[in-house]
Image (cartoon, rainbow, N blue to C red; front, top):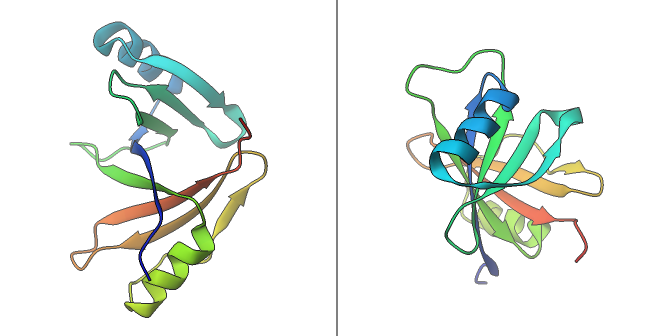
Length: 124
């Protein structure tokens, strides 16, 4: 069974201030704010590359040097989870659902690098 990828990539990074970081990404890199989900301390900005966004997650502490989590968009997160299961891939809990926004599943490569599958729940 092959994974059914969507032609989108969200590079997710932890930041200590969404306000400061949004301004920096807009002013310095020219990215455009797509949306901000205040209730979960998250926003996404469009880059200059179609289908590639930057996601910012507000955290109290951010390790020096940052740390990014690649978020791969899929059409069906359950099918993607089943695919990982068949390969014995370590996962961080169950699929998380943020109503009206996204369904997420965190998993790890053999070196422990975190990645996520995301299924958009946004209509349109």
